[in-house]
Structures are given as C-alpha cells and as structure tokens.
Length: 502
View 1 (cartoon, rainbow, N blue to C red):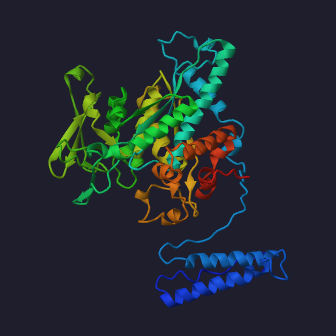
View 2: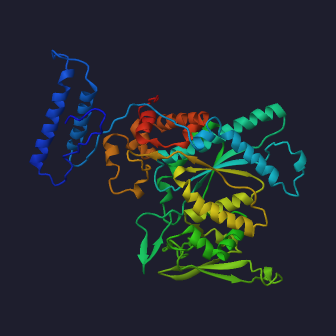
View 3: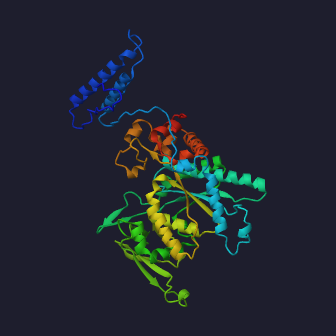
C-alpha cells in the first residue's frame, strides 16, 4: 500500500463491485481491517516503539482508511476524504472588486437610477439632486414551495434579509446626519406556486403537460408553513418587514399587459432566445375545466392572434396592441386569454427564463420603487447573459421609448452549496433515487430541508437557522465570501456542530 512521498496515490477502491461474492466481500473487509490495524499499531501506548509517525506512514494509514470505508456496507456505500480545516478565500473577479464593500456600490447604483429616472411629475430638479434615496427599496427573493426549504434556499433568504438590514442601517446613518427622511426597506418573497406537481404530468402526442401546485388541492399546504416560519424568524432577527406574493400577483403587475403583448409580438425572436431547445415562448395557462387544470409545458401549441377592440379602433393601422393567446388542452380543447384583460392575465404561468425576463422588465419600468434581487449563483453567468440580458437589450431599445434605459437589474448572487463533487446540493426532485442516502448515514441530511433540521435539533428551528443567519451576516461584513461556494462539509461544521472554521 505504500507509495512514494510527493506522488499522488494510485490505488483504487477494490471493494466497489456490486457483483462481488458475499464471502469474498467479507474477506476483503477483514483484510482491510487487518491492514489498518497493522498500520495503526505503532500508535498504541503499550507498544515499545510508540512514536510520531512519518509523513509516508500517515499517508498509508489514510489510504487504508479510504479502502476500509467502502466495505462497511454494501447497501449504503460511502467514501472517505480528508481536509485540513483551513478555509481559503482567495481574491479574484467579484471577490476582488467587492472585497471590502458590497452595499456601498449598490446604493450608489440605486442613487443613479433615481436621478436618471426622474419623471416630469417629480418636483425635484435633477441638477440639484443631492443623492438622497427616497423611493422604497424592495429586496426580492423567491422559491418553489415544492419541498421544505433546504440549506441553499435558507442561505438565499438569509442573504436577502441581511442585505436589506445593511441597506437600512446605512440609510439610517445618513438620515441622522442629513436630517432628511430616507427610503423604507423591505423584503418580498415570491412563491412560484405554478411549479409542476410531481406525478401530475403527462405526455400526449409527444407534447408535455403539467399541473401546478396552485391547481392541486392541498399541495401548497404541505411545505408553506416551514417557509413562513423561517421568514418570521429572519424578519425578527433583521428587524426588516416582509411580504409574500404568488404568481397571480406577479401577473397582476400594472405593466404586465404591455409586456405580454410584447411577448406575443416578439414570440419568434424570444422563442429562440429563451428556449433554444424548443424555440417557443413558454407561456402557459391551465385548462379552465376544474377537474383538469393541465397546462402545456413549453407552449409549442400556443397560437397568437392580434385583434382590434373598440379601444383601439382610432389607432393607426400599424399599431395593433391587443392579442389573444390560445392554449391547447389535450382533453378539452382550446382556451384563450386576452392581453387586454388584466384579470385573464392572472391565469398565466411562465417557465423560469420567461418569468425572469418579465420580472426584470416590469421592475425596470417601475419609477416609484427600487428593486434588488437575490438569487442562487447557479443563475449567474451564461444563464443571465443568454436568457436575460440579450433579450432585455432588444426590448429596452426597441419597445420602451427609452423608459428601460439606462437602468439594468440589480441582482445579487447567493453562494452555492455544493457536495463532495462540486455539484450543487439540490432538491431530491432533481437527483437520482436515494441520491442523498450517504448524507442520512453521516447525519448531514439535516441540511436537506428545514423540517429535517428541526428534527435534528429537536427544537422549533431557531438553533440551526440561527447559526446559519449568524454565518451569512458575517459574510456581509466580509463580502469576498459571497463570491464562492460552500460545501456541505463546511456547513455541517457551522450549522450542525456549531464549529467556527479557521
């Protein structure tokens, strides 16, 4: 088992074959145990040659442990890895640019937004604007309530309340110095209750259909209490008010009629931009038949037709502003909405890229409030460049008459929680069956959901969530930590063990 110092271990785990005969497996396990015992014997106090082990001997012992661990069980196979407990936060990119301060540059951007979007009705003279932010600031985050929130979602919520508290603190300091009343700050959590319910989907003639949580009786009630409990704790600890909203409220936004009309008019371009796989805009509406509620997932059968109403009869002929969108139910046929009817628009659903774009458009058009969004880092980079900024530029320059310029969305990305391989810790919906069994064995499955965390501590959630809240608020004081990922092992130490890493 020995290998030369300074070289990588070239061994393998010899007991991984699922078809290994049981007797041979037991024999291999016994051999691994004996090997480890032999290597450890110099450390026993009753040995005449007990001594400090050399580096090569230490490596041999660690290698033997790695070979022993997978043999402990044929059903719940685990592997051993090691770390030195040293936490590195190297600078680069965002962590370099915002090493000392994240909120200061954000507030500067919000000030610029306010002066650049002064309306004719605004009594302030742009030339004399002193930089005082007076419009309410809303920090947004969202979640699909299809499971009890896991640690990644909890970090997003903690980040939203932490940054809101930091913004409010700085505004209060300025308010005291200047004597001018500053803007109120709050958090808004949007629940995507149009997420599909597992087991209610179907495929008809090659087309995918789904049923949303809001359309399955009792489905939302399963996990929502956990979300509200978390939000009430964080609101109290941060002393920041919060509200919650759902998708019917999202589509009730006053700008939504014109935005959905834009989607209808630009559906060919937007389809390619937002859905490279299908080339369609994934707007949906559930079948209105009460016992059906199926919605076509990707909008491949949607039909868009312009029409003229009494309201636009006197408009120029090239300025058609109203559309009908016809949806298809495989059981009950076509049904439609009109873009001119705000009530009908609340029936709409949208997939993540379309929803992301609509949200950004409506917030950029809003000149009465400031919007800051917190979302997971898995939505950063190419995702936003492809599905948000490119279509947003098209819309801003072609369709808003300058109302969407020169502002851009303010988005903060929450650090990802990753497993041993660097993959993000996900909802069980998106991993293979029993994908996190090893976490259960190692008692780190308390990070998989808030419900399990409460069970782990045997309390109302305050101990584990409180430790996480403390950790995230410390990231606000040391912003470079917001531009990296955190492993399950790291968070196990922080949340479950109450350990402070070096």
